[in-house]
Every structure is written in C-alpha cells, then in structure tokens.
Length: 143
Image 1 (cartoon, rainbow, N blue to C red):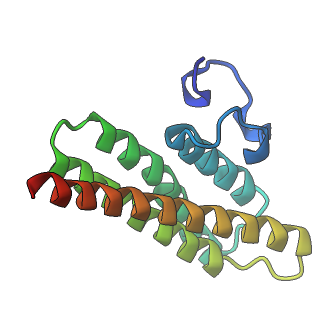
Image 2: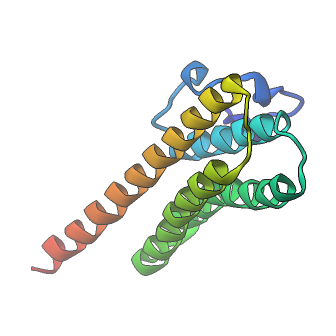
C-alpha cells in the first residue's frame, strides 16, 4: 500500500491522524503531521509576527519527517542516530513555534493547536525511545 506522501492527486490535508491506516508507520505519521500543520496555519491570522512563526513551523514540521526518512536510508548506526536526533529536535522546535503563534480569541484554533503540540510531543518521545533502544542494543551487542 502506498504511503500518503507517495500518492498523487490525493487530498491528504483532509485526513486526520485517526483516519490513517497505520499510525505506527512513523514516515507516514510525520508526513501527515506536517500536512496538518499546513492546514492549521492557513487559518491563522497573517500578522507580522505570525508570518515569521509560520515560516519556521512549516520548515520544522516538514523537517521531522524528512530527517526520519533520511535516518532510515543510512546504513550506518551513527548516521541513523544523528538524523533521528535531528528529527526529534525538529518536533520539539515545531511545538515551540506553534505555541508562539497568536491565535487570540479563536477557541477552535486553540483546540487544533493543542492537538498539534501534543502530536509533536508524541513524535519526539517516539523518536527518543527509538534512539535509546538502538543505543541500548548497540551496548548489548558489544558485550
């Protein structure tokens, strides 16, 4: 089955995380997260400060998945760990930029923002767990 980011002419913006076939497929989940962030920022007021935050959150949300995909392409363990760590930091940065956005007096946007912040925290924790398990397994195989 093709991942959402491999499908052509599909409206992935309308897909919620709950509708995904396999939320355990981290490549797909990070892609859908970036698309949900894009959908969210289209609703945010284009104030001077929000424009800068929007630029940053677009970069960081897309970078989570891009770095995770890259980590899976590297044959070496050190390269994998480096890219997976970057992906985790990008998820943390995405949370930061989302929280800085001014969405005053729009409770529906606040709910959506909280969901995105929560999803990025989950992604960060998942990546951290993957990294820690890989390091632990490296240590065990050396002994």
